[in-house]
Length: 192
Image 1 (cartoon, rainbow, N blue to C red):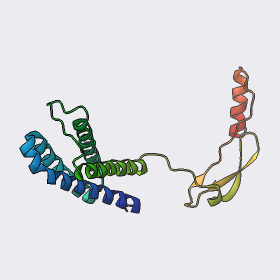
Image 2: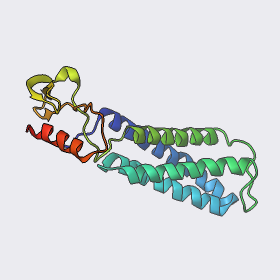
Image 3: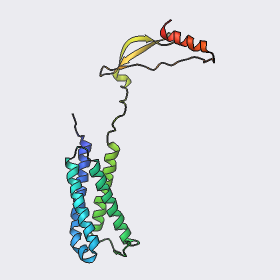
Image 4: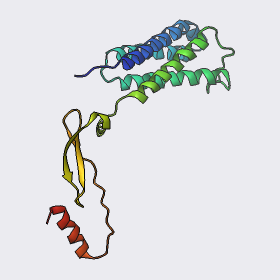
């Protein structure tokens, strides 16, 4: 059964709200920027549309990695564009003085929160293909003992799920460089 954790739902919700906020804030600035610098206005419109798609994808996709990555890249691009346009200016000579209150700080806030939510989601995303952790010692029950290579009695344990967990055997031997010693160890292991 594929269930989504409460943390995943919360982070997706935060990401979707930030994406919608980003789209709304930039959408409000599109008309002014189309008149002032046409290509900046187009970039605002396109990024707003992309972030609306990202918000919808975060809420509907079972595996939203593409949505998260797209939203994070757009947010990073918008933050970079904002900072560069107010410090050294964009490559085409466009320079924006001031913070464009309240839109500038609010857009930085929602873009930064989106990236933070993505990184939090990424850090908590389950890994696939890894080996399951052995059951905790308190969750195991004793099974009949087994004999190790050296005749020591070693307990076998089973996990809560009933899967057998075999304790590792420590081999205490001084290895000699002779083939007869290897034969001796093999004979002991096979019970001869």
